Structure formats: structure tokens, C-alpha cells
Length: 196
Image (cartoon, rainbow, N blue to C red; front, side, top):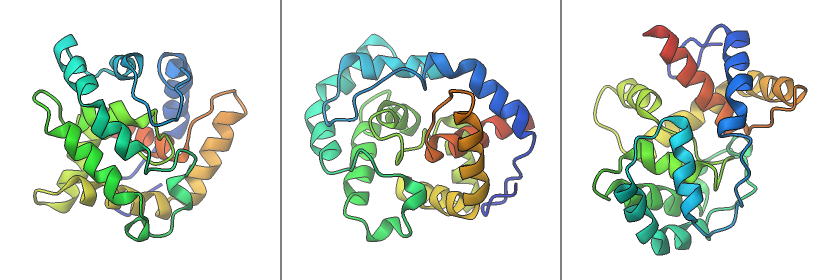
């Protein structure tokens, strides 16, 4: 599968097997998709190699009023794959604002911000860890905003819609339930991991 951004994603079986083996550590952990941000939801990101300290987790938790206000404006049950044009959606601005808000906290970057928020809105917020975030920054060939990274990810998702839907169904048959957003972000991460 070649993404619109240019990345060729191959070896799906290995990627899906890796996801199945590691599913219990993060993706299978239930998180309420309400607008409240809890300590345990912040700490959960350490299971996907977020390198946050207790002080950083505390700073994120202390900023929860702004996070919770933004989450209240972002639908919990929406799937990014079903969105034709995110720029026309009222939830895009609060989503970008909350990622930017967290990114402004000392020792928090886009990786930590999106790992904090992903489980709260798993259908809409991919985890732009260092590999995935760096990839979407490099695609543009210039410094880009979180908004531009997000829209580029959305274009890739829409372009690979058939494959993404197929692989989510394939995983579901093995009791691994993930969103389309999580699956594409994971496939990009896995391919970049294998490229290096």
C-alpha cells in the first residue's frame, strides 16, 4: 500500500502480528471517552514508550481544565475515516488547540500530547510519536503545524481507505479492536521502524 504522502507500507502480516502481541499493553486498556482527564489516562501512555516523568504527568494533569473544555467539543464516537473534510468540522479547531496547549507545557511535545489524547478520542486523534511526527514533518519539506500534519494524515487515511477498513476487520476477527485512525498510525510507525 502506498500512501498519498509517499510512504510505501509493506509486510502487513508482520505489522498486524506485532500489534496483536502488544495489544494488551495499551490498546486493550479501557479508557472512558468522556471529557474528563484522569491521572491513570495520562500515565497509560508510558506503555507506548512515552518518556514522561512524574513532574511532566503532573503538569499535564494540572492543565486538565483546558484539556477537558476542548474534549467536550470533540465528538467521542467519530471516526476520522468517515470525515470527508476535517477543515469543515467544528471540532477541528478545539482538537488542534488542545494538542497545541499540551505541546506548550515544558517537557511535553506533540508526541506526548497526542499520546495523552489518543485514548480519549481514538477515532480522531492519531499518536504522532517521534517517528510518525517526524515523517509527516518531512513530507512537507518545511516546518509544519500540528494542523498540517493532521490534514496530511487524513489525506493518507482517505487514500488508503479500502486497505485500512480491511485490516481493521482482519484484526477484529482475532479479538483485536482498534480504530481506523489507530491502525493507520500504527502501520506508518511500524513501516518507519522497519526502514531504520
